[in-house]
Image 1 (tube, rainbow, N blue to C red):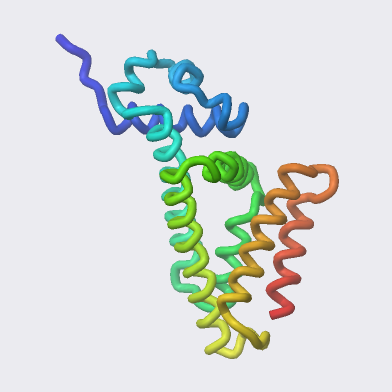
Image 2 (cartoon, rainbow, N blue to C red):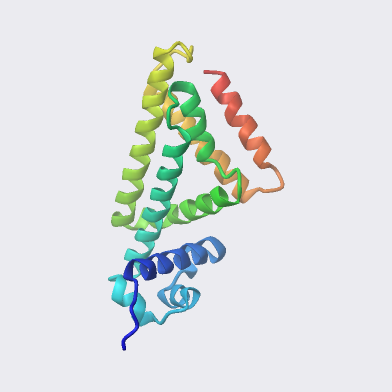
Length: 194
């Protein structure tokens, strides 16, 4: 009797393996051979589920973004304005092991996105979605009188997102210089100044 295979589960296992390889060894080390080995499968199994390496990488990134979206949705349920903005921004910082892995994964894709239009499109769409959410929450906070800062909401959103990216990158690159506590403190200070 042939073995029954759960194709969704197997695909998820391959994507988890891809994320582990990228986070641990870097995106250049995420070859189909390395991903297959990490997942405990042959290259042929990967070829059955994905057209090529880029599809695996894109799917791994998209799956990570979906998990982040779901976590954020739970965190901000019933919360609006500045409180929701605080949750969203803090959740995008590498303040624990899970978010550190997510940040490492995201940063690993940045340089590759510069050379891949397909990957750049995904990155830009995700960044636009995050920027839209930040801008929306800033608007809610301003309407509720929680934000005193004048100026363009677009500019404020860019400033906050640049701070998220910069702080995240600094923690990953210079772990002796900043701690997770520092990141949270700096982000909260920026929000307090609004």
